[in-house]
Image (cartoon, rainbow, N blue to C red; front, side, top):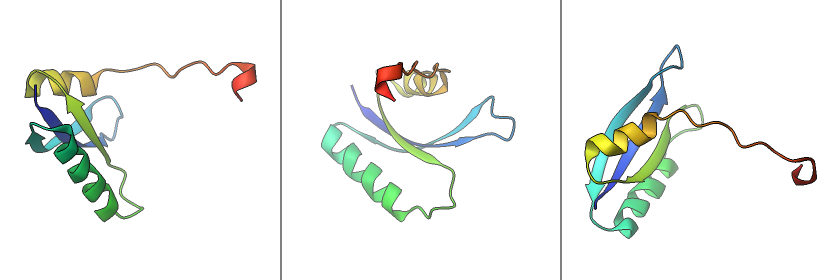
Length: 79
């Protein structure tokens, strides 16, 4: 399965994420290198995230990125 590197920006309403596929790789090492390089080139004012997704195909990767995840509950002793 390939690794997909995406630039993710939130929409104005915050309901849908804008996904831009940067590159597809067969090895994790190459995907990780591009991710680090791209994050390093971003300036502090840019609100985008760069993520690597491991999925069967591009559609599956985008579906996983669009999923709304709940924040984990922080227990008192974890604070």
